[in-house]
Amino acid sequence: MKTWEELEEKCLACHGCRLCERRNNVVIGVGNRNTDIMFVGEGPGEQEDLKGEPFVGPAGNLLDKMLAAIELDRKKVYIANVVKCRPPGNRNPAEDEQRACINYLRRQYLLIRPKIVVCLGKIAASALIEPNFPITRGHGVWYEKKGCFFIATYHPSALLRDESKKYPAWEDFKKIKQKLDEVRRTDEK
Image (cartoon, rainbow, N blue to C red; front, side, top):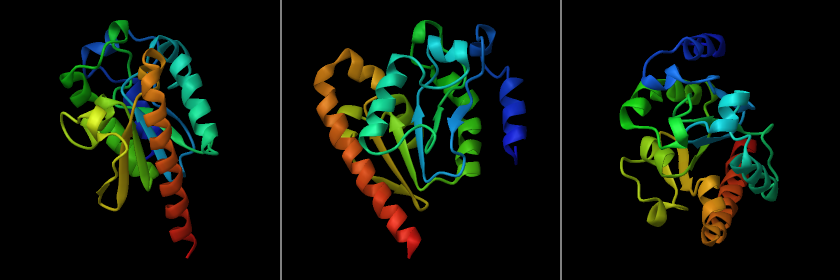
């Protein structure tokens, strides 16, 4: 999968796990493929499965507002998920489902080469930062891997269920804005 076309072709034809059996659409990703920043969620929900685009339901509306608050929008960033097909009932993707799909996400990362990856929720952070990532204690902390900065924050759907997490998430997004400005200043030199 050396090109976006190859990646999309493989994703659309994927039958690597049971999630393919009930999908309406494969939800590959959306946004700027030449960006410095990539946002990764866990998997598509019902609205995303119907439309074929990540973060278009209520959680997506909240993510759009959070991005706008730090002067970004989905056209300036790239948004993807750990798994590309909707888990039934919007449950968390199982480990075997994540393993079946993770190479697609790795390929997206390699094609984009972002300088910052924002993990939206525990599933994404566990897949990309460290297994069994403790989202409550670990959110808002920067990790550097091979020249890329990773940070985790609460998934927008968690914020819709528990408003007490909105302030910590806002603090995380301010850190994201600060790091993105820092990365871009460094690139200009």
